[in-house]
Image (cartoon, rainbow, N blue to C red):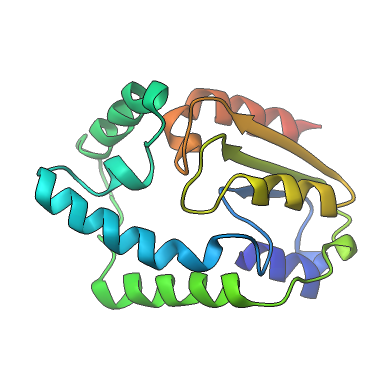
Length: 170
């Protein structure tokens, strides 16, 4: 969401843009991200699963890929990012909620090449928002990952990386 604002307000800073699992300001269902996140967190507590299992890996056919993604998160790594604090988490949810309530913005001023990517079954930021972004951006390509949810770029990271590299090399 911030990337869209930067591309609009300071376009000279952006040569190409990849917008993954996001939508335009005021996009359908975006204001519900906080509610979905809270509900899935409670659901995770009752089922003894991690909330990401519900938030990111929902489509039935993509569950195996989702479980592989969740397993990769547990792999030991060097210089790993710190876990998000609760303060930051709630600030992020508040910002997303405000974005979902915002008035639509004129995206036609973004003339840079844009790759819009999402899973076909994104419940957090409904996939129709990706179609709307691609429609409203004058120089956009759209990639919808079949059998993927909000975390489609993580569930099917090999496909996403190949698409992203191809886009960036063009």
